[in-house]
Image 1: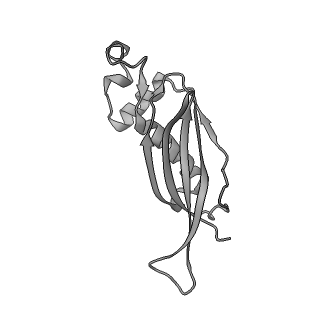
Image 2 (image 1 turned 90 degrees about the vertical axis):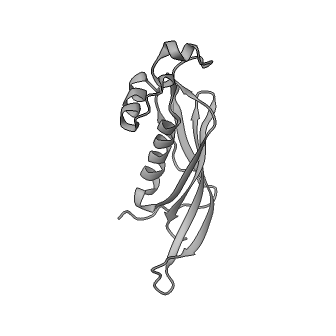
Image 3 (image 1 turned 60 degrees about the vertical axis):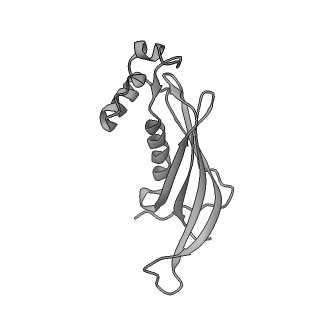
Length: 146
């Protein structure tokens, strides 16, 4: 097991930049997740939808953001993760993934040995595209006690 990260309130771990998003990225994710909505692969259908072009499925950006959290803090230290989709991602967009530590709380564990517990950091998360945020969210992760 990896050692929990050492962070303080206000810290912003290194961001990750992904992209530009390609049709191949979208098709791969569609195959993995089973989302074959034509908005994600059929330009003719998209032209009738009101969108200016093919869009990536929201779960793709959420998954990429979850990968940043688990790579940054260790998947074994992730206690919760939630997102909200706020804007579409189009072919060619580049995503910037990051977050800010907004609080750190000490908790007791169910298998608590006297004096032991976990330090849990709450993070505000954002995945931004070329025109601003596309996914926002939060995560709770175990961090090193300070």
